[in-house]
Image (cartoon, rainbow, N blue to C red):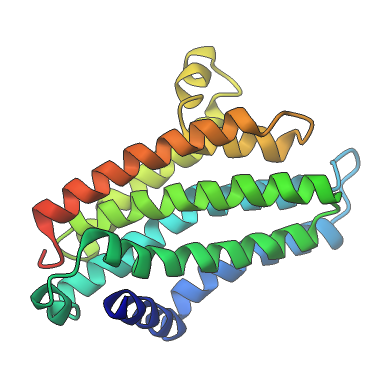
Length: 229
């Protein structure tokens, strides 16, 4: 518990000292707010920009942010005392990933406040967003653990973010891609945020399956590489 709290606190302090990381959590809601209230486009649904920016944030932005933060810790050997203390995978994941999950959840609430949602739609929106954020945190954490430095994390994280982020968009134009994208958590985020009349349970099950697989990958990566790089 002490190690988990220490990791959580460290990530919070690191984020507060990183303008680029802070911008990532603010720029997507800011763009959604500006596009929603200050740009009048005829025929555009009222929440289109909110749901668009929210899906991009949950599916792409967090992957690179988490992988960068963890790879930076490894590169700088700033977690050496935790290695010596024998920190377990779940302790590191709860501490580090838990912080990004909380930060992402707060950002999701901001998106919900910007949008014109009913209470039922807010529930669906936050449920799928936070679930998707959890999957992105796990994917970013796995990439970060495997990376020796921040350059490697960027080289691995950006393509991964582009694939999971843009496949749902490409799925609108190709049936084969649509079938493949159906297995991705990002596609399930898009399904819900673009049509709140759809039942949330199947998308949540798909996202849950993604989380389970990504959790296994993270544990394997941690046991193989640890925090030593």
